[in-house]
Image (tube, rainbow, N blue to C red; front, side):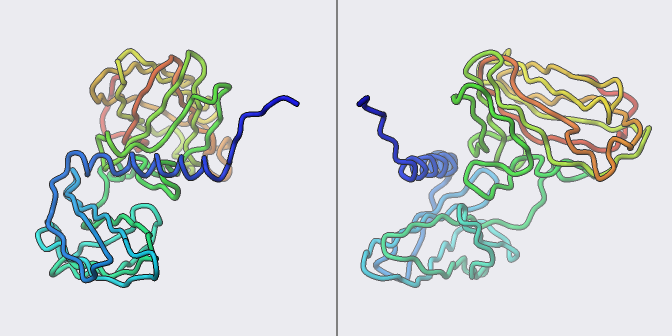
Amino acid sequence: APIGFPYAASAWSEIRTLAAETMELTAPLAAGKRLHVTTSSEDIVAGAWIDRDSSVVVLVANIAGRVSSSFNISVPDAPWSSTALVQSVFEGFEDIPFNATDGTISDSLRGFETRAYRISSPSRSDAFAGGNLVYNPSYEIRVNPAVPDGNYVTVADDDAATFFSDGRLSVDGLHSLRLHAPSTGNSLALSPYTLPVLEEGRSYTFSIWIRGSIGSEVVRFTFNAEIFPGSVQTDLRATTSWQQHSLHLVPGSMRACPYGCRGWLRYGLTTAGTVWLDAMSLQLSRTAALVI
């Protein structure tokens, strides 16, 4: 009988999750300022770093394998306000007990369990301002590590084509969307979630920030011609620095959007390479003309 390649689905799933979590923590651990941390238990070890948005990432581990441990962790020198909140970076827990006066987190961990927290003041990404109609425009919302909410995804023929929320590069917030195509014509295609009904005949401005790994990568944006008559597709070429691209769109009859405008846009790489996208926006225009 032929020898098959051994594959343990659960093991590889955990490896992928671990890789995503490691990537998420790379930026604050590699470039962030280390802060002093105190813990209330000898079984608990912790470290804290300031991230580039002035939030604080705290890593905690229970090194006692026997039982769960409740603990208090204090980061007295962290730069937060009295309105600061604590969230678990990966589990999505809300309302973790936190004393903003002295910077103390209260929680519990099972034996050998680890957890990452982010302490930050409530803020709103610039991409959400000004009536932006795009859901999760800066790819910050992620139920699963590295998988941004807000897009329907069409897979490519090549399994090496990937996308994920990258916490190492961004122009707005802490994350961007990283797209990789191993060869020309083998990119994933993404389509943002449904828009609300648009105002017929009004001018809307679409904008997106793009950065390429080596420059010259091309991202194609195909707009639904039934929703935006005369607007078919636009190829945008990346450079090695962040660049904003903008264009005007005028919706036609809203008969194409009886319950909202689904499938209004489809985008993906047309060339091989890697690009990052951030701060996607669609909102009513305020100026007479914009250029790509």
